[in-house]
Length: 245
Image 1 (cartoon, rainbow, N blue to C red):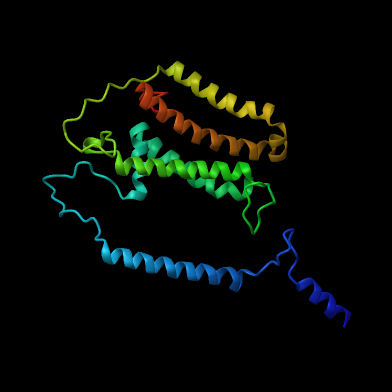
Image 2 (image 1 turned 90 degrees about the horizontal axis):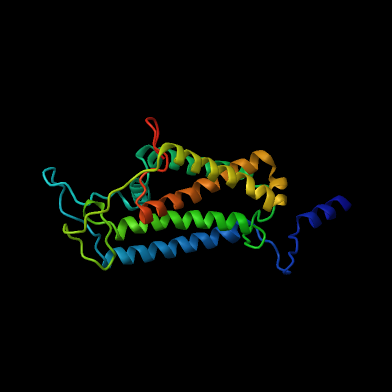
């Protein structure tokens, strides 16, 4: 009898700090998600009934489309090809994104937020993820609304025309200067946080810290390189016979 009462007490929902009871995922959460999915499906069906899809004319091999744009979910990658070498934008960066998402559970040591969402307890993780997520969608929006014929830049309110100004010539940094800049960027980027946020470095450990900061520096460096291309017309920071960055 005592064991039965103890088991019943353990299985009762615990009280949270706000005083509300914890509920099970099924049916509490799943039922609400199912109703939201049905409502979203109804809205999409009504929208598709009254608004036609923006279909274009049939493809003509003799007159290729200009600009030739990928599906919207690949436009961020296509926009990145403007600023980077194809092997870097098409292989290296997507690989880093995939690997970074895969290693998140192994480099995240914060036990808070398991089963619920909170920004107060996970400021760094939530901020970095939202920043990268929004940055990718900014590239998609640029590809959709700001790229016209020959992938030239047009503001959304400008009409696409072939009579656009000739873009300025591009130039690349010399190999020694580019190599020094990359070494200084990653070297200082890896070292400075260990001096400024010592607690962050000690909690993560050298392996987790190195992976986290390297991925973060790569994301920030991508934005800096885009700024160098748009502001100073720099094509490559490091140009060698084997790789271009």
